[in-house]
Image (cartoon, rainbow, N blue to C red; front, side):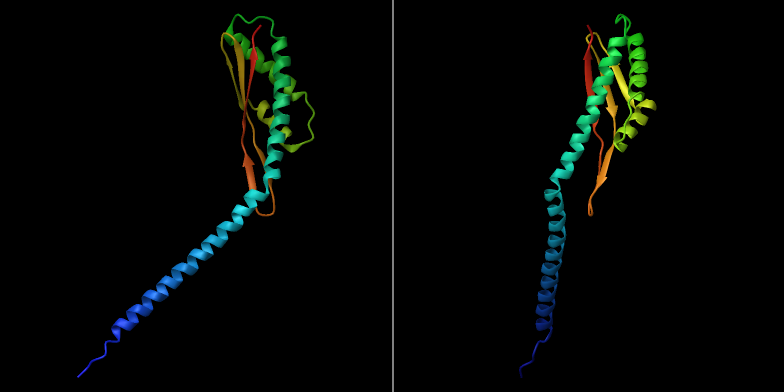
Length: 154
């Protein structure tokens, strides 16, 4: 008498179904990540806009820093130089009139002392923290550059 073993056939069917489910889920994940990659690649001009805004902010920081350095009379006491530079820098930067939101936010940030000034024997170093944000239909970006400028003492 021969007996049929149906349990082996069911095991093979289950393994094939699991393999099929794994392939389908892998293809689904791949297709979802591929669309995100296309957004990142095709929005390079959007990123360039952030760098352009950073350069504009850097210009105003450099200009205000150079004007503040010119107002300092003596460079003998580092603490006095630092305090005077901060005071002059804040005054000069607050006198700028901006229309763009990111520059207005930068101006408010400077008024709230959201920057650092270090004075050594040769130069004044200023680190200014800012935030530039923007979005497209499918992507929101927040860019937080730290602008570092050096002003050599004469």
